[in-house]
Length: 408
View 1 (tube, helix red, strand yellow):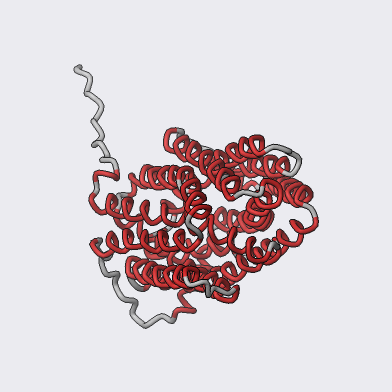
View 2 (cartoon, rainbow, N blue to C red):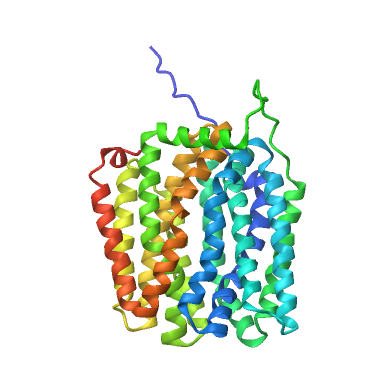
């Protein structure tokens, strides 16, 4: 008998060969580059105006609260109307707001309450844009392309976050914060132009009876609760992010300001995290991991160890090296878990489920930011140490849950 040859599987084209994904990638990359000017300038501006880590944490809390409260509504709307249109509306509103702040800075008429308003408005925009973005990507690439598409997006994002803070710090130091905000506003035009040329997803069949937004939100929550691995992942994400968000978001800029007295030091710390995230994203695209549960638990514990050590390190170079390792672990874990969720959830529920998981990740962020601000004012060393040890303990306790260990 003649042996039959194994069937040749069709080669899956790279997502960058898709014109839809390519436009979204280019526009989003330019916009993200502009965002680096915002990320560096806002905390530094607050510290220059007030000199207080607590004031900076309250600014961040002002954005975190509406983001957490409205995220479920944003996910429900992403499943009811076009996520592309939501992304267009939020990008346009950000452009207007950042331009207004830049003008006020240029005229020397900026007050702290206007920065609080900016942070609040950005939090509202994030609540709708984040689930819309997660729901839109699987609509313009094939299911088999999701890992590569997420890898390309995260790798590009990390490259930009590596390269972006340095020029942002230079612009902030030489030209002032107004120019940094103007450049961020201009960058939004790229994502607006890309989204304008992209298609809306096909219209979904309408349900027999009209469903309210709140009923739609409850349906998304019930969907997550019925899926034990998703529910366990949600609980772990909630606790881990509570332990880490405040100390990192408040601690790094306050550390750069109080100990190294330079916006370029802050930019170096941000670039270090992004460098590690780049390596993690590249590794995730190459390394096919079967046991994602153990990856998530082990990666979380390792991140906790890195964060705990930051407060004990005296030199900028040492801290930067630890942040590179932190970024590698975070990039590797985040990409595989994100892809696992996108592939697991039905398209009709994806926006709501992603919003529930995002709320789990950021729901306690305002409390974490407040705690981070208070601890940073007391002792930076103990803030990082407490946050890191708490993360390790939570990861160790979570490893006892078979539902999490068996995520594959």
